Image 1 (cartoon, rainbow, N blue to C red):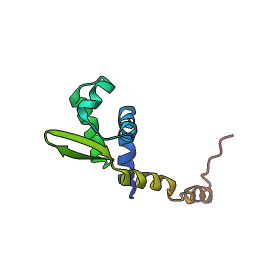
Image 2: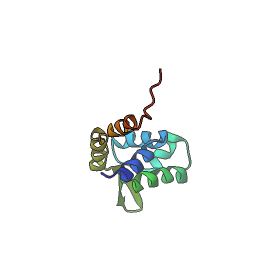
Image 3: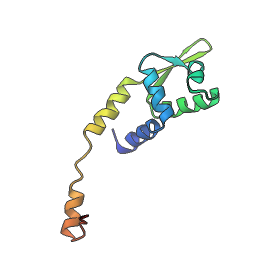
Image 4: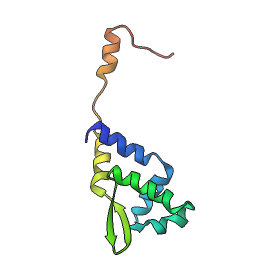
Amino acid sequence: MDTNRLAAALKALADPTRLKIIALLNTRSCCVCELVPIFGISQPAVSKHMSRLKSAELVVETRKGQWVFYSINRERLKQVCCALENLPDCSHEFEKLAEQGRLVTCE
């Protein structure tokens, strides 16, 4: 996963409401109308959170008649976790600073 996509997913997860939505969806799929009373916020506000999660590809929607149900995109969450576990080694940045005599040591 490239860093821009990873950053977008992490930004979407950085909000406490959206993180709780992911935790709830980890239990089962939900409709926005089910989430409104849990959070005590308006339906448009919940829908906006869902839109942010959907644009980060963290949730998928399924239509059943007039209802839209959201569920976790488990494959995408696995990719995010895997990307975090395999961040590139950037220690060379410290080495470059040391070579330039610009490495700062806080003591």
